Length: 359
Ligand SMILES: *Cc1c(COP(=O)(O)O)cnc(C)c1O
Image (cartoon, rainbow, N blue to C red; front, side, top):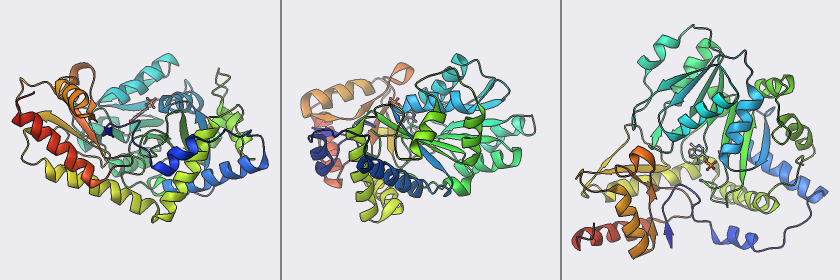
């Protein structure tokens, strides 16, 4: 199997081996030590301030999106939410559930947020800004410098979902003034799904400690308190957290975060060069290194059908889209344990599909 989706993705063999081990009991000094080490390395890779903290949530990325919104904001907030696809839409739905006061900034599919779109929101009393750094559904990487400057100028609390962008695109939490950033285990961390992470700066921690959200499992105050000694309030996905520790050390040993981002960048470039003569257009005007969204030049061809052909006849998974994008866009991921030769295989298979008129 060759998996070019955007998660779950292919894991390295050493990581998979850990998945076969017995799961240890976790209320021990040994496990606490590993968790504190996980926190330290994640802060380093996000380029977070020393005073920041990391919450380890057992649940997929959406659990951390939900918990962050619920714990960080109150009805007093006036929030801006960038909505350019499924994941931006998800933040709007979360705000709806908690009856928060928000305004959507709509971006057309495949189009990044522009300076002009932000102008109407300057000095309008907003208090917070929410964005998915890479809107994975359309493969659009927003301009985080632009957003950061806008938030600093207007004194907005900045919540960033970097679930698919982490380890792929350059990011400096402290310099950008990002207050809270989220990622998940099954994207570029290339682990099993089940863990997501929330990095919080001191402003975010203060908001959480002053808030009284109506939730039991998602009360981040408890996670922060327990995290001081390297623990979680409830039984976490222990096995994935052990794999996380191995993965973080592997990144560190192979040159750290900048080298890791560079690997994603090179994979993305290699693939994008390979497909230059194939009958697809790139469907985003601002690409992340995590994924390439493609649309068939021939509008009568279904993107979803190509996904099915590659899956059923070649054992290769590209990433299909849902909803209105189902037939228009498919995506090829650059995350997980992928080599350049894997892209050669993918492109050869696509050429074979075209030559044999299978599509
Ligand atoms: C994958 C992803 C999520 C989280 O999805 P889950 O299925 O809950 O893990 C959220 N935001 C973005 C940008 C993503 O790519």
